[in-house]
Length: 377
Image 1 (cartoon, rainbow, N blue to C red):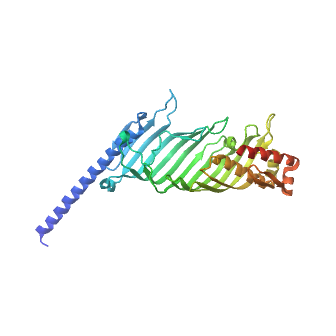
Image 2 (tube, rainbow, N blue to C red):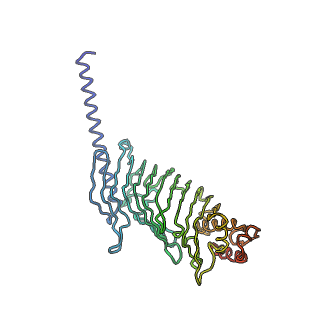
Image 3 (cartoon, rainbow, N blue to C red):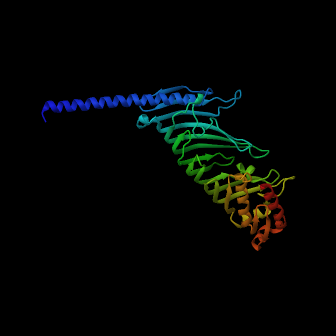
């Protein structure tokens, strides 16, 4: 190859490189501006932000807030910084694909209504939802969504007479393969955070996958050192004994397929202190208080339970929350030596171990279980 031909080849390569780089810059900036436009439209008029910076490879949004509806009320959503990185390969396909979205220090308020409906700061788009004016918007595919140092404020209004307020802090989460609007396919997830307690903080960890379209799921949940006083509205009736102190450890394998729930689990209750008072029923989870305390003494302050939750989400009589409580109460009854025929079936028999554990309160057991199971019907 002569020097002149080599020079032409090098010049051609250089021109191609310049054209490719220019196309990449134009493509990234086009995607970035498209993302900016769609994001602002999706957030709605209540969204405010300090700034949007379109860089060479990403879009950075600083101090995003969704303003609260009440005067002086807290903002339901705020994010210190959002970094969106588009994928240039999606440009010719007509689909917007994002390599990653990073959320830094978000604060989210979530409310569970009395009817079980979840209220989020932003509504989730329905499958196949279009843009305003009836236009079908292009799908946005997200390869990876990561959350850093988040806080989640959960208010549960579904518990009668006493709303539950829980706070998760230092949340780190990752979700792989999302689509907006929703599309078929599994999304893997990892979640870890601290559940703030009155006496100590506990660890919450989730790992698995969900299928948003079918609502199938396979998630392993791990709870460690959860302050039991936070959960008493779920576990106890209003007139039952008070829990002064206690910790809960739990491992749960939550499976949903074709709307059928299968969730075996193990739980350990430790360091439990119960306080009775005039006007309160001396029972814990529908079981006699003294029998539970006697069992704690015989187990070095720990009660280990195995339980199983099964049901059909299409059945309006199936309540997931009540099913978990009933399953745990059944496991506790078995530790006391009680055989339970089923929900609403009452007590079949009381073994020798149960009689010894219950002591003078054995006769109260049938009534306690009946109250519990009648409530779950």
